[in-house]
Length: 394
Image 1 (cartoon, rainbow, N blue to C red):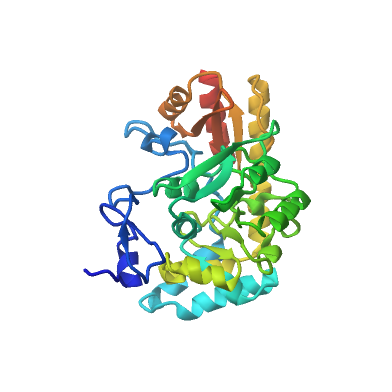
Image 2 (cartoon, one colour):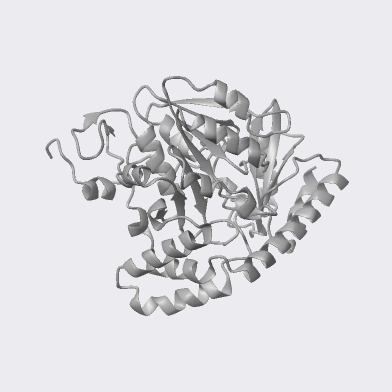
């Protein structure tokens, strides 16, 4: 094959070469051997050590009553998105060049940034992977919270990058002070998930902004705002304006949550053009998005009638969940997202298995010397199914 590989050839192989290849100096330069992700590794979900397909699939004899394990929005996508998908089908044989530009412009206009600051992709996952590949240089370390969303850190760790996981505060929030103190000369990236997953807690905006202003002068800060649409004031909280003007800062957004696009796959980052060029070496970016998904995103982006209705129903289901937990004598971490984390009274795997036997899927975590359940917020009938199953084993 030689020492030079085309970008398209590498990306078709998912940049996951058997035996591993490390991109020292980028994809356009010499490739050298290194322990990297193998072709058989497949999808690595957050916290793979506690993940199992049993979290998502019931036994054939047990009907799924409530899928509450993946933080999906059961109220979406919107009717406008569904109609746009249908209307896009006749021309779906064409590459969606115009749609890519139209969507990035629509986002740029709303966020008051330039189109050159936006990089689209099929969900935020390919962009997290691109960041893991670019910033996961040999000998470097990445700082993140513990627990926090592990997609980017886990991928970088599998490439040999040291992950410095910083425990949360007593309020189960990311400890920005401790994360800043942990930065050293080998730190290549600080990853912030805000609101955080799995704790559903949100940071003080002013404190986070001040943190990013200081830290970005030393190292790149990646702020993942996947759940920001569930906050009372997303536009007053987002750091997108800051990312569009500040070097060494990236903000990621996704349609997978409140927009209900988890299966349709579309997301983006806002950052400086030079960082977009660097990340673009490691992802097909907008070329990985289908025509139908782009049209659905165009039709539903900032559709306040749908988004507000979905948020209202989410909050109602969450309040119901709170009441169930309180009635059963359980505490919980107050949630700023579409999921709730609470401590449980049995081993996590046993708990999720027992719930699954009753047709309800949830996730579990182990941290802070406790066993925890994370339950996604579903439709009211799903929350009632959760309540019925939970009362049998609580």
